[in-house]
Length: 415
Image 1 (tube, rainbow, N blue to C red):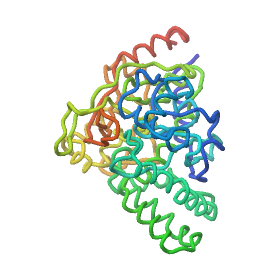
Image 2 (tube, rainbow, N blue to C red):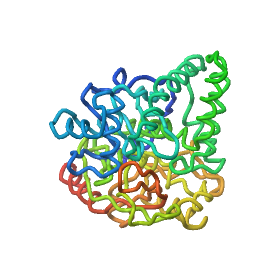
Image 3 (cartoon, helix red, strand yellow):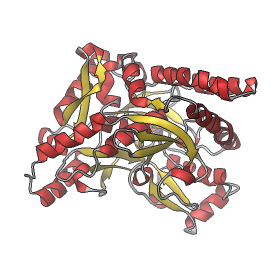
Image 4 (cartoon, rainbow, N blue to C red):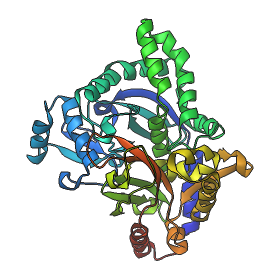
């Protein structure tokens, strides 16, 4: 078994992947293994008893949205009675930001990697403020979700249905990285491109001008509109390289607010986990690190696929949101080249002479060099429903990479 050749195969498949946004569909209809009593969540597996505040709040909101519970008390009662199953989004070909809770009736983006044929899914982005992904479940939160499900989602789906084969997310990301985005915490350019590509199609499929205006305003006002399809695109990209015998490339990295977990291409579906950290960064007025939840969300699939914090050199302005300096953003990207196997030619960084972003984290290099992947992320309040309280940088614990490498060496003998 030649590990280096296996790793080259994985990275080649990731770079060849061409994720295209095809449609918006109900999770129950499309997400593999979705069932009526199942809620998907971000990160590695977790039980209700160990869930963080934002995760618990999102679970409650998901049950209310589904019509399975009328209020918090009934939702908690259902969970404690064992009437609700919880499984990671990643175990169903899906991803979700922050708490990542995805219920069967929710509309999701479907991304198809047209190179290899695999698909991935993500929920629709709610925007800022009090939202389900941060654990909010008030009446206005549920009302917005229902509008997104009943109006926004079907309209985007109708728009995509008259497009020329869907929306090429790899091309969109390539453009947005040249416009100051990094694809995880800064998506302003990408969201503008996304809205601009959808707008003429939406105009064709919507007769009511007030509805058209509401949809375009919702998309245009939300600098995170494109984040969720980007996450699904990165999931489809990483999954293209998963399951390659003998590969030591990380194919999943995700957090649930309590633990962070990774999967490795050559080790199948086994999770390796460790405790989450609290991001260090900038807090909104009135908040501090004492208010922060543990790191949470599937959005680290962006770093897994070679963007996000790995592409921070393309987005120096992000430091005004997460703290630091433009030089630090440059150093973050340059450090990640040390623990990756390849460079993604589709995602290039102008300030580095259009060098491709670091792609394909090799767990052997992580342990050997003592360098864990960088993550830039939003920070959730530790209590359900308060919302985002800041943004910053965090790294996963080295211990889970060591555990993964021990398992890898036990299976492959370090060849």
